[in-house]
Length: 443
Image 1: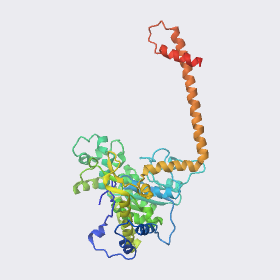
Image 2: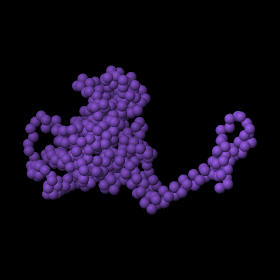
Image 3: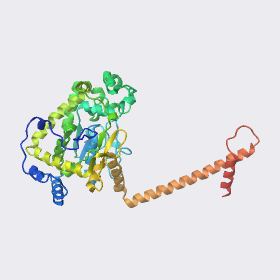
Image 4: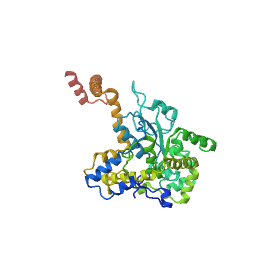
């Protein structure tokens, strides 16, 4: 199994329970998958898998309104892409930031951060990075399901420290083990102001709305965690991403196809730090508020799995077969695709189905497409083209006016230059420029 940059596997990820105990063989759905588990080159196999991908629970209606609280380095980008793909394919509206793909890194979310137009102030989905604020989010996406994802604080901090290059920001990159240096005195370093400093101490609880000033107040931490428990419908776990998606599918009444994903790549070795049990314990002690958050929702997660009923393992098996098939169809995991300096991307196979391209789109790519769609939705193509044409004409008029103004200024300067051409005071206007201004005047 290969592991993605956010810590999720591309294939099946065994649950802790499955590692320690034997599981009975589920019937029905599992058997139907096993019968077609060999190669999916034939049309009948493909048709069977496609039909299974469209399965949903019969006694529910698909939910189209969702707020996804996007935490950092928790597989949240993969999760956000999943929501965005669903919303885009169903022509839903999105609450978006005006410019980037982030609402704000340090301020709690408020409705004024959203790109809005007259007559368009509420939306179907909110999926971009925003610090959790239920009241303000409810004003923008009313009657929504609320979902987030968290990760073991030890692996989350290691990933954030590496990905956001905190060692360089803190001036400790020169040391052989920058993360070790940071953990020797984390309070000293975290108090500095640097890029993504909010993620250096209890970053997940910070994303979920608790200010750092309260992280040492055990009563405040407990109160905020309980508040999150009442305000968020599903807290997914990175370490059990497949299982989380099964719970999400049930919550939203979506199909298996709606929760499929493609792993994006593998983090480069230069952006990884050694993780020993002792180091993991040290990080958890430093991020004790995040640890309390994780322990609380790890317990609620498995209660939800238990409440799901006996079909859980069966549904999980079906999903993993579909997921493995999708990876097989779309990706060449032995070949590197386009990469950046922090991670190596998996290459796409040639002549893949259209769904592979949709699954491949990143969070930022979806945001660009969706933002353009929101503008088109508000103004319409004809009006939008008219606005663009009008803007171009206005720009031409402004440039023309600037040229005329510059020409007049040049003429004035040349007039002054001619008056003082015998002077040695170092005038900066050349005879060539005077000649240009004269030509402009004649024309």
